[in-house]
Length: 306
Image 1: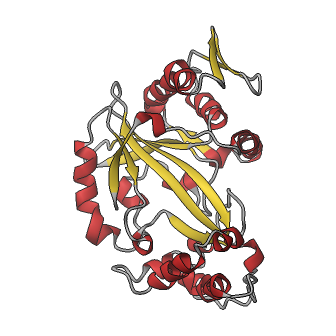
Image 2: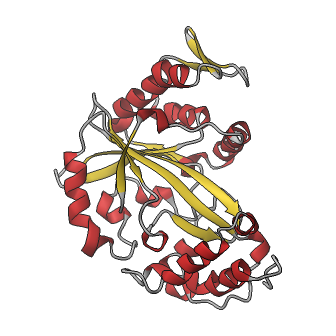
């Protein structure tokens, strides 16, 4: 996993889709609250620390044309919504506010009770990619990544050491410098949706390998999107909790092709089976959609024969 030091100013992104995405997040939290956020009582100090930093310092300083301190609240000058400067007393209420404040998802890791690694003790995740977040709650980092091919043999020990050494105040970003075929944070999704409930994305289907190997007759290339994540990892200075912050992007394959990146993505899809971890092809579901996606990306007419 390629990492690079990042600036705190890059932590939160505001783009042209910011307000439509906030509306989507509100809708998701109104219908899927129990699966989109969860917290243990032990995580509340860490949630409050991040909340206070974002609301009282980061957002009004980083984006003064959008956010302004109007005590006792932070005001969004575009939507006219306000957010209390004081973190809500209940951790789930605090997470729900964080979930509609910015377009990033957050996961909070605390040291495991047995002193061995870190466990997921809180999250607000609106854009899950077909996996059940509630199944990961309280799990250790290594168990969260248990299904990722090559993680246990190639990354587990080094990542455990890396997290133990991560200094407060240092912001780290998963980079795009590594070869696309070896990066975990991209895939092709057939739904075109930012949030996929458990089983809606072929990677995490309960049917396991049989789903990943299923014939591709049902693939609708018009719904195919490249899904990527922009990920940051950092340690909070007061509580020492580790935070994962990630923003999800979807790009229609037609757009990828028009922008001249079709061949590069086609080569990356084919490379899933020939990289250092060939099992990544099944993990990403490429055995189902790979052939049709590659055909579309390389078709000279600009239209795939899905």
